[in-house]
Image 1 (cartoon, one colour):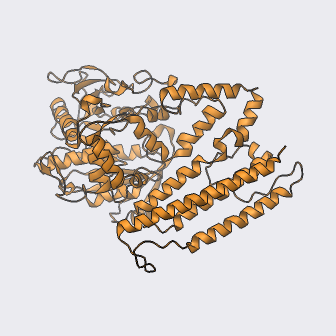
Image 2 (cartoon, helix red, strand yellow):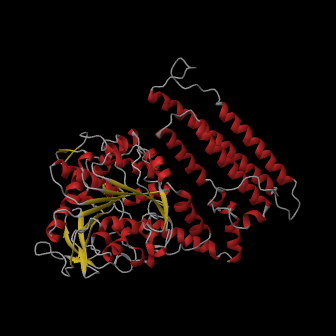
Image 3 (cartoon, one colour):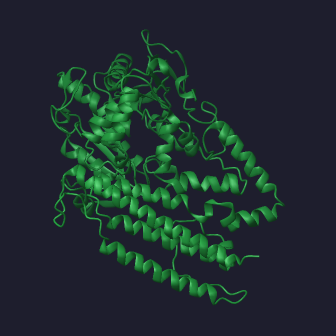
Length: 580
């Protein structure tokens, strides 16, 4: 019978060899990148990056071998019942190896620490590779992270002591449950990350009272019923992201931004984007501007009898809104009283982790396939976003659902995260090329939309710009760049937490904080140095800003819509309930 320590050592050595092979492949990738950008190494006459070993990489390899030798020596000296010294620890917040089972067994403790050594080596090795800084380097770092996360010993039954302990404690029932969970998820085509039976849109999510008063091929427009006797004269129109469903802004009453604004005495209208089918697969960027915000603004003005409502856009909804307003102002209109942009990019100089996934080759292939018509399935988009946080949104549930046989807990935000929406190919291809790849929206007159050459500098409405400090999709430093492009005055606020949790932060929970400042500094870091941190939600700060521009108080109208745009169906409407 073989010694289990030999198996562990062999497996670890295999990981080490695989890591070196991966580094070798990345060196080849680096050579190609150098050729693409036309940089010629000073030590090579043919313009190809030289193959000799990178000195920094060599030092990393030597350090890795010496640290492995120490770790192995510690392991061999252990007596029964003893624990090895902890030579390497997980990063803060990494809960994969938190249970006592990992340290209780010297074998699993060694496996854990050797994996963390290899992971640290690969992470540093990618940083030393001769790849030009920018998206090529970021792409290599992203691929390395996917590789590292996927090979964690916690992800495999044979190398996860929690799996073994759970199987023993349940007499194998956890294995049966895990297989059942896996088969159910295979049938759904996605990993379950919440108890989906606990929620239903229209029953306990998106239940703020209102009616759909208008619809077209791409969106439904909802008007919400008043909750106060008097309301501000100017209503608020909300443009959510089209990549996801709108109810992230109307989850449950206690964390609904929609309900909060209605309670503050505003008449609220909200666009519910359609998860497109093959019939809408030909729609492009201009269609989204025309059939989306520009049409919604016409309806809102007609119903509210107000020339200039407030508007709010979230994430890509904010980008679409900004482009639509640039068209309107380019036509000589003055369409809105104020603009609120939540975690929104209009200058894509700092596009976050998504930027490294957009390159000419992959985009050209996508354009050839669906650039003139076709669908991008919502699940494909959801998988991309999950990969940005693979340990939290993929591997955690692989271990919990399939290895331990658990059912994920009910969590409204994760239910929304699983409820993805389809997009038309022409729209997505235009968006990725013109904005992520070319960053053309920031350049006055560079883009023509709906026959108008647009310039964000022509938008004269004041803007409230919210970013969140830990946002990996829209870096706050990138969102800050909107200030230098906007034609009207801007107020910038930085919230705590990430892209979604930082936005959905109701005051009643009294959590997190936000930063405010009067500085108009061009550099975001300079603004932050001069800002002040305030406890609690940014919602209260924003609603004061909004009320100052809300107009006089008028009696709330109980009847929704008007003679031209009457109620079609109760909120939240049909479009948001459609699921693939």
